[in-house]
Image 1 (cartoon, rainbow, N blue to C red):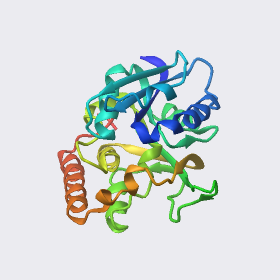
Image 2 (cartoon, rainbow, N blue to C red):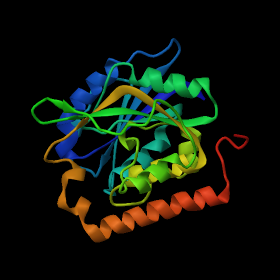
Image 3 (cartoon, rainbow, N blue to C red):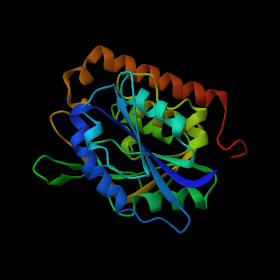
Length: 252
């Protein structure tokens, strides 16, 4: 396996103009000697809206596919992933300096850690930022803690899935992102937390952009019936995985 971090980004037309800022944040990352990143941009659909915003960089790979939502776009992009680790970067978000190096250090130091997340700040339309109350203590996140925290806090995960850094083989073993119209990243996070220990970095690793066109801001995202169904199936999957006693790593 190459010493490469695969950055996976799902994008659609309205979010494409933000790719330049995401790319700049990637270029500002410093990695240990011998490590590199590759950016896989996958359009959710086939339009002429995204390609003009894709950076001209040999480290960047762009593909299109039929529409299925961001989870499908990210999962199909894994066909091109040949690195040891996968990092999520939504098209409208920005990494902060040091984010990749911190994630990498946590997982390289401990083979029983399968995934990492970090503190997040909302990036508001006026350029200001806002934090989240209730972040966990920095350090390991034990199996089961994500699901317990999610249930106790009204289906709000204790760590942000948009910051996910994960071992590629573990991600593939779980089938990538859940086949849901939304909350597919939360569903994956719950599954990861059911089978593997995680890590939380208390340093801010991501600016999560708030804007009118983001998918999570649409009315359909908060439709009560659909939301209840998404939450039910995500929880059921995590509990089934926990009950199976399958663990990552197998001797962990």
